[in-house]
Image (cartoon, rainbow, N blue to C red):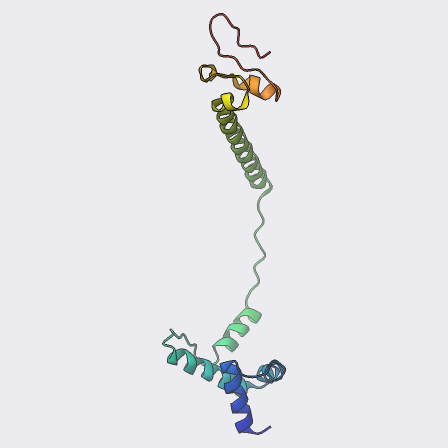
Length: 155
């Protein structure tokens, strides 16, 4: 394949006009050939400049210097949490979850208590003073208003 054909394929690939089979072969060739990879980078840079996109470039050899620094740099072992701290964090998480569930339960029970006339057949609006423990005992509970004569038991 001569230079003009490669340039034409690069241009077609960059424009999205290269068939997928040829695109795969060309991308493998770009991976192996440093000059072709540099041309591909220039095409990308030209396209970004034509679309007025912000362009950030690195100096020549930047990737090589980073790779060398990574390969030769000291390795730092990952920091592990101390056992006491881990226990504290787990306990705090568990307490938070318990508080959230309790809060949601109380909120839901209050909502049920406010809607008691809709839930309990025959209940009147004056009977909205509902004891929350009575609602939690059984699903079929008769709810009555609390007054001095009634002890507030569910029947």
